[in-house]
Length: 120
Image (cartoon, rainbow, N blue to C red; front, side, top):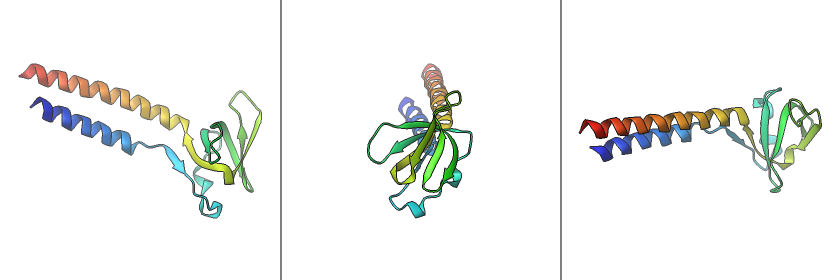
């Protein structure tokens, strides 16, 4: 009984985590990439294809072949990233929400397992 409850709850938690992916990947062919899902005024973490350091940016707009933004809400340093160098873009707000949901889900699973072990 204990193993089946634990197995079911961990399966549901892992399905939730997998379905909460907040990353948009981009292909080598720039013409196939759709950057219209990026919203101006939101913070994004951009992973580069060349393996350089991830870049955080407050997205502003797409200007030709570049993503344009600033380094942060309080830092007005302009950041220009070529589309050809973008491997993936992650919404940092969604990632924090997902992490919080995982913690809450883990606490729920622990409570469920604890209550089922006391019922026996």
